[in-house]
Image 1 (cartoon, rainbow, N blue to C red):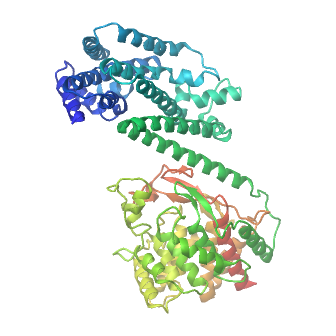
Image 2: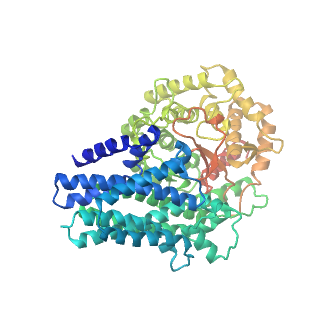
Image 3: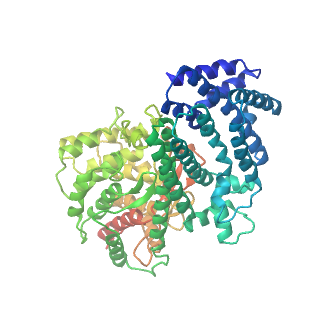
Length: 636
């Protein structure tokens, strides 16, 4: 095969060079990885001609000498950009002397390959453009031309191939050069987007920085965070990436015409990044618009019944096509999960006007998923089952069977159980997902609570017993249960206590210790915290748990905690009926088993090791609604 021939040629010639052995290995490694887009160009052009062994040898020589020549150019470019000598030299000890040796070897080889003047005259014109680009002042009109001017040297691959393979139609060469230009424009726009922070620090010309600085007359950029906000809010990021997408698609179409599979593969990788970023930007702007529509003024002393009615009105207003949505992550907006959760919270105590059965019918079709575009997960399946139970509905065998798949041998429930989630996330099948595949308290506690509501069903009774045993074993010395997907132990502890509080077959001290832990974390002002700040959701969840225990124990010692909490929470409702939300959902890396020890959480909707808020306030509002209704039933 031609590729094997060229690789072996590379290996033989590089091994004979008078340079360090580590550098030889690095050169070979990068040739067919980092620089494969360019190094396969001569070979792909050669395949369009009339192949023969003599020409293939020349193509191999051209590929090697061009690659080595451009390594030196890249080194020079990084020096002139005042960015050091780049990873090739800094990490592997490339010296300037060594680069001169490589450059001499490359030039000598190219001179032997092209002894005449014709190619070198054309190549000199390309070099003039390359070096002149450093001295051209960018303007709005010439910005992209300035940014992509240095990539003009890549035309040399095509010009050189044209001199070696003269029988090819000149139209083909022209179109390949066009494809390179479109590729470089798209790549530059994508690369500049990724390098905004770095380019601010290094004072480098960058498409997005230049556009925003010019448009807003920013003479000196003092904060990259402020600049990034402007780039997103102004639409500059979306405009640039849309252009990148368009340019890359044009390049891909031309390369597809000529069957350049290596170039297509590279472009597809960049397109995936660009399209992902566009998706995130659009989703983020959508989230921002949704948050802007919410009220930020608190209601003045509403009664319990007024607060309940206002909350129901708010939640009803957020229903769209029988779906509620909240929490924006890499997987998109939470829809099925949120809808099942809201049905559970709203339907548990009845007495509202929402068409919950109709909404549940639609939810059953799409299933227990975060949203309709992602695979099933245990959290969403938990609330789907819980919804069916609280509305007194029959649980289809398909739902039960799907739900049971999330139970592990240790009797607990994990969020995911097979490699489908890896495929959905475009991760390798051998990626480590031990955290997401392990049984988690917060997931198991909700499964246990759901099953506890219908113990007359033998299969649910078995699930209850299994999950109960798991939770009893996992309780910490202080009475808490660790949370995996949630920022505080209050989540797992509350759902565990609610699932177990009425079980006469377990030691009463288990729930007593859980309640003591919950009450011990209430502040003097009545609220519970999320990362040290008042949290309406955790406060409502804790109050519901304490009231549930009070309902059965009638222990008056619980009353002060309930009243103090209710006094605080009733001040947290906004004029539109919603309740204050916070970043309480955490998304650890899939291999993380102990998220409590992770310190570098990021406040963002995208990526991993991040903390996400219920920006629509639906999740928190549904929990508060349930708590207020329960309080009204107990004490109203």
